[in-house]
Length: 91
Image 1: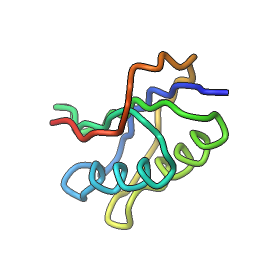
Image 2: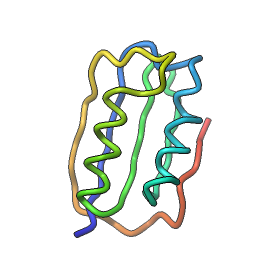
Image 3: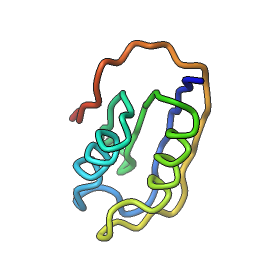
């Protein structure tokens, strides 16, 4: 069953290639959506895919790349909209 997550990642998550590694992980898992830095220093992720695959993606978001420090993740699970055809990095 396809689901959607909307996540805000808090911690040392900008300037550590978080968006780049998130994109690699998303492509590896077949997740669609986007990742972006936010002005408040957090990273925002909106993604859709199979619920089990998204759970693995969420597990990775709680860890992040080795240079990052994830303090916590605000995470919301929703029904998928089907609006994404791939995974992109936004500003």
